[in-house]
Length: 136
Image 1 (tube, rainbow, N blue to C red):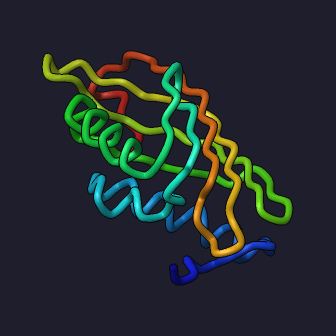
Image 2 (cartoon, rainbow, N blue to C red):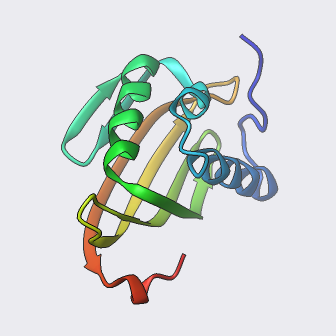
């Protein structure tokens, strides 16, 4: 498997690059593309769901973006050390009925030596908003 740059140990510059790459990828809403950033045996906790492996990530993302319409995400690096990062994020989306939401959360990431994310633990809260309150 080839390396997925930038690779750990991260510097301030490469940590910012990794976060921006993740934001850009997730905003494509392409499960096949996004899942390639994770190890084959990646471990996730997303809200109350526990996900194991790249194929489960791909299926999870398909379900997510079928529900969360017009999804737009912004990520921000909060800290890093060696092969780990803490990231805050917010994203906006609406459901089939047209109700808009802003979802806030924090993620803890751990990368392998080739730059693939092997662990992702996310805590997320959703807040209903009016379409006129959108920021993203």
